[in-house]
Length: 235
Image (cartoon, rainbow, N blue to C red; front, side):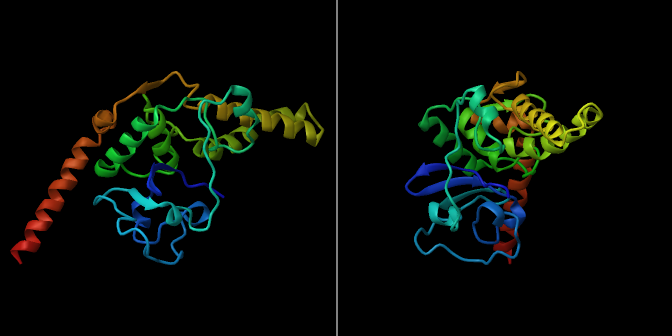
């Protein structure tokens, strides 16, 4: 089961990033994130719950709608390598340190108004959004897997099993094979953690669209929306 990650911005509100195709359904978390059958609902408490800009997957939700009866977990930043490696599951911590709270909230609210590009479960997902808001770090080569631990876990598990398979000939014991596979899995996660990688840079949120090539697409979408609005007025 995957987690859904967001940034708490105060006032019982969370800014988070979702696939655009799921934005017409209710705001959800955890295993309900990609479930098209999850029931639709509206927030009875906060009128602005569910706010987003057109063609954007960045959403403002109240905390209750964000959780949707799920459990709340605080993602850990600035953990030591030993703590990171001790975490069996990816997507729960990073060695990268968090920036000050006001900077984090500024990034989240700016992206709420300007978007965070196209959602991609491997390269640009909800955890990537939260990690950027918290650290301001971007990977220079965006052709690889994203910044998130969940994506690294999805790829790291099968990769570790594949890489460790030749060692099975040398380790007849199932326990030995499992130990080697688990060790390689943890090291794969560690090597791809944004706090460890050397191919990362700090990017101001105002320059994010230019750095990732979103600026042109954002302008085209805005022009299309403006043309659509003119059509509606003309009718």
